[in-house]
Length: 242
Ligand SMILES: O=C(O)c1cc(C(=O)O)c2c(n1)C(=O)C(=O)c1cc(C(=O)O)[nH]c1-2
Image 1 (cartoon, rainbow, N blue to C red):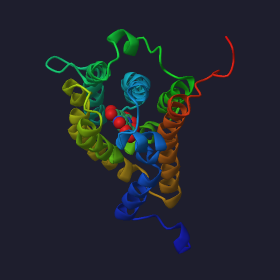
Image 2 (image 1 turned 180 degrees about the vertical axis):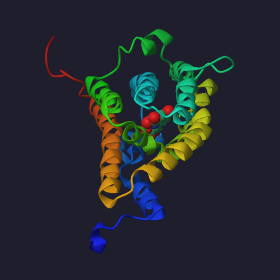
Image 3 (image 1 turned 135 degrees about the vertical axis):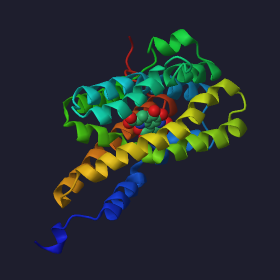
Image 4 (image 1 turned 45 degrees about the vertical axis):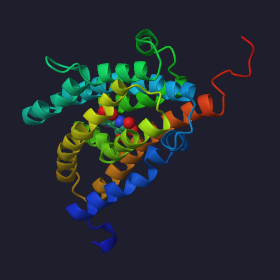
């Protein structure tokens, strides 16, 4: 075997995964503008309303992973992700917290939950993620959640910057981001352990990088659709009289 094909050590493999941060949506112009406080109220509302579709589909994605997973121990841990979003006695859950965020930026509950503002490009990207989780071998599907490695930083940025740059956002809006700081770290611990154990050969490890890139593509494509619609003011069919 040439050294070129040698499997990466656990540490090297993890470093390769972490290196994919360069393609995280934190670098997308939509998120850069958001972070710098350069979005208008309407543009920020557009993002919150569209991201709600991701929020509602995440537990469905996780239920699909569990449905394909014969390992009881994994399911017993993975089910926590569904409870985090859907809620359980004592915790109204992440979806409800996102609705609170929507109301804190001036949307109504009905406007958010009806999905009326969700752009086709956002829907297609999120659906691609759910369909991947439905069809892929379960370790592969589980490992695709690892963009969460990079999520605490983007949630923290919002907590740090929004109160200054968007002072009109009401306090209740921040619950979701605070909640995710700890949840995402715990998810990553489990997801990373599964991933580092599962992909053994160099070929398999490289396949995982492609899976992670697919997931990064999902997030980037969602941001593209929102940028076009709300920043460039070119929502679908904008130039056609209806
Ligand atoms: O706000 C963000 O930028 C962001 C990104 C991601 C991500 O990287 O997929 C998630 C979340 N938030 C999030 O809140 C969340 O619950 C979540 C679950 C997952 C997943 O793939 O299972 N990603 C993310």
